Structure formats: structure tokens, C-alpha cells
Image (cartoon, helix red, strand yellow):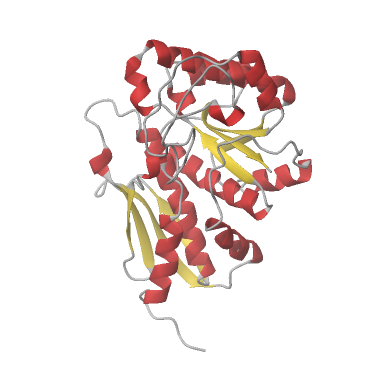
Length: 307
């Protein structure tokens, strides 16, 4: 058996880089840089995306970096390594997100191999799902994929809580309609459930998303959907809410890790998924949503899963 060298081979580099490149990111910006020194990997935040003063998109960029980190760890494990991850901060390198070291040779687990295969099949499904209930055991498996991510609470939205999410989305949409400063970066958060009274085309997480037939164009809102109809549509789907105690960078990175692990578990179970974040960034929407659901922290991301 060949003894591993202390550097990555060309084939190793391709496997790791492909995993990172295919991670979902806000507006498909891939706001990270990857370095592969020795038998390690370093993920940095691309600070050129930062806006002067208040930076409303940074939370989603940090979540994006977390999804890339989840894939990075997975790629290294698939290559046959046990990994050790050190998350930010590093006072000498404020841009660093994490360093992942290959600690010792270890064969990948069956789930590692399946989840790595799921990376290339993961896509955002922005339309309504088939009206086929997702089995409780399958949802439990998806949620279990994030059990080892500290500080992230994942909750399945109950049927009687669908109106709370619907009201949060329509509240955010109304705030956006009144405040043009939000509209440039606004996500599509109601087209998933195809309500009436709203027209939109957007760029969102991932490349090539096509909502309304025009990927890469800006969202234009023309109305606010009916809350009752929206709640009924939400109730037909399985919706997960990801929450953290704070909105600090470390918590946001962990949300990204948890999101990608859950997403890959869903793909492995032959499900589709998509995520929503921007409605929770509008004014006090997150606080209102958390209070109504008695969440143990701040909601950071909403994930839909289904067939």
C-alpha cells in the first residue's frame, strides 16, 4: 500500500475543489477562496464583496461559506482522511472562515460516499412540490444530518404554524413594497407556493435558477400574496426552520454547514429542496417569527423539502 504524501495530488485537488465549487451560494457569488497548503485546506471569505457600512448580504455570504465548508470536509473524508476543523476567528487573518486538517487515514463511511455523490445532484427546486407527503422517518433522517452541528436548532414547521410563516412572508413583502432599498437584493420567497398577486423574476441561491422564466434578472414585486392561500400552500409541504442563538459570524457559518448537510441528506433520500433567507432579514421579521413560534433563538434560514 502506497504511503500518502504530505501534499494533495492533482486528483485530490480536483475532488476537493469540485465539492467546494458546487456548494450553494447567494446569487451564485461563491464568496470564498480555497487554499490547499500541505495536507490541509483553508477557506477564506472574499472580502471584496463587502459593502461599506451596513452590509445586508453578509449574513447570507457567511451561510454560503458554511455550505462550502461542509462540502470541503466531505470531500476530504471521501479521499480517506479523518478531518479536524478549526473555525474562525484568527486574529492574524480576519478573512479566514476555517482550516481543515487531514489528521489520519480513515476509510470514508457509506454516508460520506452517498452524500458526496449527492453534491452533483443537488439543485434548488423553486416550484411547488408534488402532493406526496414526506414520511416522518425520512424527515427525521434529514434533520439528523445536522445533529453534530453545535449551536444550530432545526425545527419542522407544524401544520398549525403554516399561517405564522405565511404572515411573516407577507409582512416582509409589504415592508419591501414600501421600502425600495430592499428591492434590489430581494429574494423570491412566495413564488415557491405560487400565490396570486405577485409577479417576479429573480436570481437567488445557486446558478441558473429560473423563477418566472428569466434567470439572472432582478426581482420586481407588484403585489402582496393572499395570506390564507399562502398558508394553505405552505401546509402542503415540509418546511424546516434553522435557528441560532445569535447572528454572529460563527453561528451563521454553522447554519451553512447544517443547511448543506440537511440538503445532501434530502437529495440522498430522493427529495428536492430549496432555501429562503431574505424574508428573515427585513426589518423585525425574524424577531416576530421567533416570538410567534417560541423559537430558542433567531431564525436564520427556511428550507423546503419534498418530491
